[in-house]
Length: 255
Ligand code: G
Ligand code: G
Ligand code: MN
Ligand code: NA
Image (cartoon, rainbow, N blue to C red; front, top):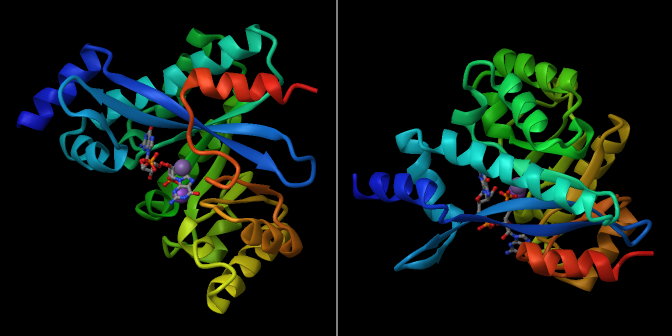
């Protein structure tokens, strides 16, 4: 109950903020996207990680307004960067199951885009496999509604959620994000390397883009490049950054 009140106050008191982690294309060496990651700047406890407060927010249902706040803030930030003349970029936003299952959620997304002035094609929504698998037909319907408004979709934490490969064929998604757990022990763990390579070829054969998460070393980059991975995200290239730090990284990378 105490958490619930604090989360409510945090939303009202603007204690949430976003950090941005760049995603890099291995072919061009350029930043093509940023994942928006929620942070709670608690007046007493300091910065609190979403892995702590998102499960609490899920329980109470507060994840719905908090998630909408994050989506709106991410769209507004990207629009501001576009208006400032920064290079074109995609903003990638995490979606929770409770949020995704809201009635007419796709039209809420459309409203947020309209309100912030961001074109739909610059927004990518990250859905986890487990979110989709909770109700495959329902998820596919919402995914099609999102696709119809021009938003792109990615499957987050891919490989961890027991999604059937035959279902994958029916999902209107553009990108798979290989879960960090498969990347961490490359190049030491032969099984993880086999799984990662297999996900990359699967994505290629299905015509999907593929990004590896949690990339922390040069050796991992080399392995992924050889395996044909398009894109990377992780501490090796950059940690999640404040809006200001991300903006200067982007400005310094301007051609
Ligand atoms: O940034 P960090 O590693 O602390 O994130 C921890 C978890 O919180 C990740 O699984 C991430 O997907 C999730 N997360 C971060 N921001 C959001 C958000 O805006 N909405 C939802 N639903 N999850 C988020
Ligand atoms: O579940 P999701 O993929 O949305 O989680 C993203 C989280 O992963 C972010 O909160 C970010 O802090 C974390 N992260 C990003 N890159 C790395 C990395 O290279 N190593 C580790 N350990 N965590 C990372
Ligand atoms: Mn994510
Ligand atoms: Na992930």
